[in-house]
Every structure is written in C-alpha cells, then in structure tokens.
Length: 61
Image (cartoon, rainbow, N blue to C red; front, side):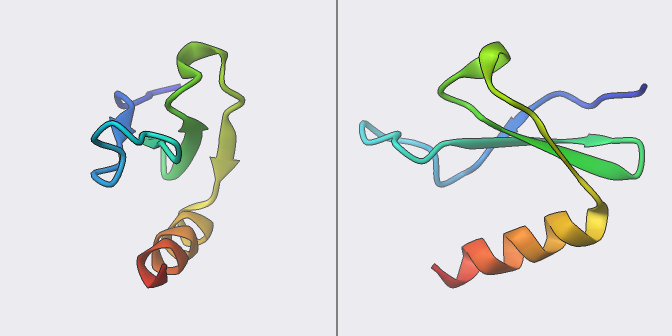
C-alpha cells in the first residue's frame, strides 16, 4: 500500500491542542487519526467522497 505522510490539521496548533486530527492519502482514499495519540491512535479509512464530506462539515464549525 502506498501511504503518504500524515498531515496535521492547520487548526491543531497552539497550547489548546484538544481537537487534533491528522490525515493522509492512501491510494485513492484517505485515513484519519487523532494526532495526540500518534501511532497508537485508531485509524479510520475513508473513501475520498466521505473525506470531502468530513472537510465540508468541519469548515462549517
């Protein structure tokens, strides 16, 4: 499986890193995890359309 490096959300910065998310592309889809947990975090596999929906929803908040 060809995995890109994890990328941290631009909103996950500063002293109050309580809602940190990382994502990476895997083939034509994406994976998402909690950056606070790093390698021990559960990894959620998302289809590209689901990941796009997640980003749209997060942008509204």
